[in-house]
Every structure is written in structure tokens, then in C-alpha cells.
Image 1 (cartoon, rainbow, N blue to C red):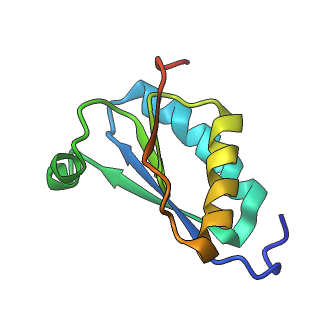
Image 2 (cartoon, one colour):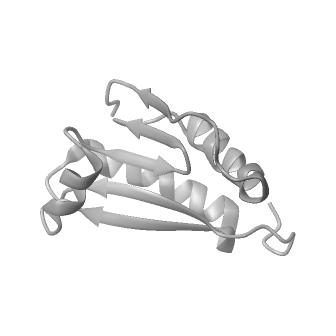
Length: 110
């Protein structure tokens, strides 16, 4: 993905906590996505220990949670699923995000 291709930034919201082992595994996946998409993807890491209100506002009951546009991943996602969500967010930037909220819940993986 060429950062100069006119795409707007996509924000990935990553809800995490310091003592969450699965969160570290999810962060590794997100770091790979960030590296692949250079400056077109921004990751906003939200530590729920420091900001519990954010978790309450989003209805988060388990960690990690990754939100990309209308996609929500609970647990450690597959890298290909994250890639699909990022690419989908690029496509939705001009059309708006009118499709129903997609939630992919997976068992956490190491």
C-alpha cells in the first residue's frame, strides 16, 4: 500500500491493559499492520486501567478489543481479518460507513 495513493488515515482503536497477555499478542499483529500500511494507518492504544470510562462507553467486557471502522474484534484476531477490516475502511471512506456493525469474536490465541 502506497501512502501517497490519496487514502485518508484509518484509525485503529486498540483497547488494552498492561497485565493482559493476549493484548501483547494482538499488539504484535497491529504492529505488523502498521508497518505494512506506513502512514495511512494510525493506532490509538487505549489502556482501560488508565481510562476505564472508555471501556464503559464502548461496552467492553473482555480484552483485547480492536475497532476499525465498523469492525470490532474481541480477543486475538487473525492478521488476515485485520487486513480485511483495514482495506474495507479505505473503501468506506468515500461512501461512508452505512453497513451494519460487524463483530468478530474469537477465542484469544497466543
